[in-house]
Length: 117
Figure (cartoon, rainbow, N blue to C red):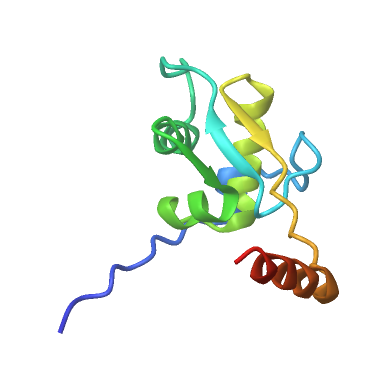
């Protein structure tokens, strides 16, 4: 039987510095984060540094970053907001869901493609 990795329990108030709201508004759990610099920023808290290092090779959503860091999503939002304000990370809104395609258009397209044979 394989051992399940234990999640490190970090109280959210430690990662958030006791704040109740992040400085940057508009963060969602599906907000995409990516590193804006190639060099590590100086004088960061350890949790901020871990988040920046995690995002340096590519982009992740807030919820994916939280899972990798073993932190609550709410605490990761605070860390990401701090790094965005410092210019170390960039964030973009999640890609919106695609709208349903009208079935009649698809059926007409299929009829037209069959007529090309």
